[in-house]
Image 1 (cartoon, helix red, strand yellow):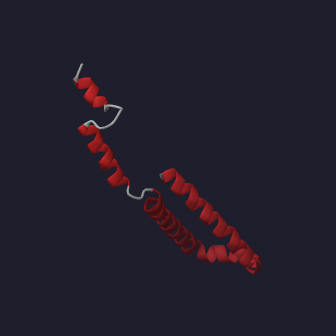
Image 2: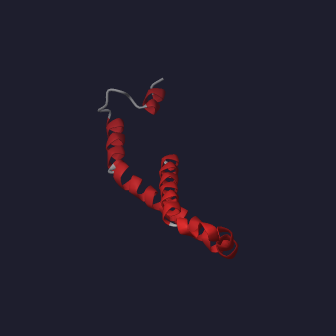
Image 3: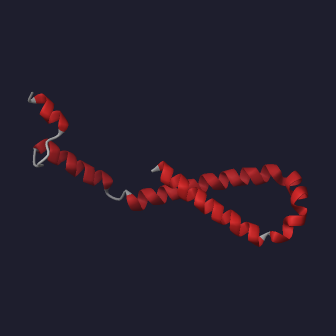
Length: 97
């Protein structure tokens, strides 16, 4: 799940970066002066933005793709302990040997 979140976050950040490069084309002649003066704040902002995008994507994926997982797993666990499934649990088979 972390790999999927990282891939989506990188794709979002790349899309944002390409869009900004198109919008801020007028700053290209001042690139070196801006980098020398504001490199630290730019890098700090980029790091914080990356962490926030990663966290937002992580929350959204957990919210939409792992919905009711705990309830489904507890239901499956109860079925395995009661013995209502066709496939026995691995630990039940070892005890009978």
